[in-house]
Amino acid sequence: MQEPLYSAEEMRAAEARYPGYPGTAPELMERAGRAVADECLRAFPDARRFAFVCGGGANGGDGRIAAGLLREAGRDASETEDLGGADVVVDALFGTGFRGEPRSEATTLIERINASGAPVLSVDLPSGVDASTGEIAGAAVRADVTVTFHGAKVGLAVAPGRFHAGRVVVAPIGLERLPTAIVRATPAVLDLVPRRGAGDSKFTAGSLLVVGGAPGTTGAPVLTATAAFRADAGYVTLAVPHESLPIAEVLALEPVKRGFAYASALETLAPDLERASALAVGPGLGRSDEARALVRGLLTRSRLPAVVDADGLFGLEPFERDAPTVLTPHAGELARLLDVESAWVAAHRLEAAARCAERFGAFVLLKGADTIVRAPDGRTVVCDAGPPSLATAGTGDVLTGVVGAFLAKGMDAADAAVAAAVAHGRAAAAVPHQAGLIASDVAAALPAALS
Image (cartoon, rainbow, N blue to C red; front, side, top):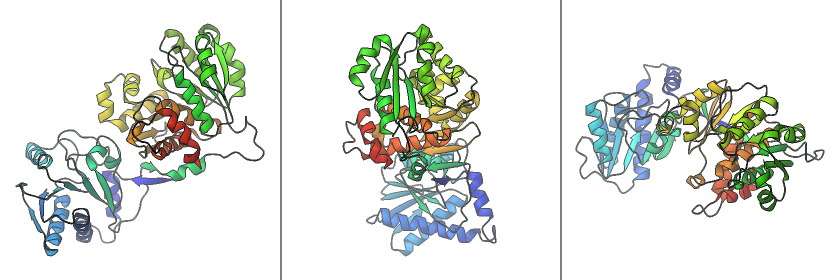
């Protein structure tokens, strides 16, 4: 259900467990260098001149071994800062031990690599990327291929580092597999999603109450409710302001529809809250004071597992409740929750998700190419299988419906969030047309993604 993502410290621990280490470190370096040389030949079979830019540490040593092996294979491979005419540039400046901002001399080399015009292969990580966080404090190499050793590093999966890595090749070098604090989700997590049994009713299969849909944004909760059904919920109630009810009646066939006035919404929805096994609140709800008060009232009075998205996150303050809550912000929404700039969130995604989980005591699903699920107890999962086509309006509303359906089925909140992110990504990837994909395409593809 998950694969390890190694931090720098965890890689040092894995190396320390190798028999005879550190005396046997040259064995590991030889294997690493051979893996780099092999990938150079595999990825660039027609290349004749390989220019290696090597640092003074182990990463540079890996590069020098690879250069020697390429010379043995009949290629022109040398350590040089003159990159003109190179068919391939091999970046072996910094490895997992790098943190912070490169010094001026290294920055110059990194900029020269990026400006070379040749394909770039990075050794272990693109130089300038923090292996443990994916953060970039200064200049960083933009690689076409990264050959990393033993296991994928956190910095290769989490933005912005992931956007510098290119295609990642994991090369085994004989180290023992160890547990890691941060893991990557695999499709096997979908095995945790309860399937309907012969004895289930529409209510025991998962009953979700969706609250949202101010005039002009009624489509958002309709997508959420539709996605919940497609994610195998048995019963969905769609609650919208009275003004939006006629539109909801036209757009949504399967859900039960409920109109409400903000002033009496909690009383109106009380029977639906009793019937539901989970709550989804926020899509298209609006950002008025009345809407914000409704979100807070639903969260503090209800003991249902809840997912809060979109407008439900606007102006949200910390709350206390007995049931688990999943927040599903994108970077801009998380920035508002933390009172920081969205650029800071984009540059520090792991830290931002952790801060939010701690502040709200909630499970945080930070959306993006490297969707991050952070639990209040520190569990962290990266779900990075979603295609770029998900960057379109409404797909977040679909994701909310999937999280809500899985919560309604009784899943642990962390598992529900991770499984929802994986199902969401698989559904989007399965749509035949990636250009022009719309949110309803993703909802329609959910059943196949879950089968």
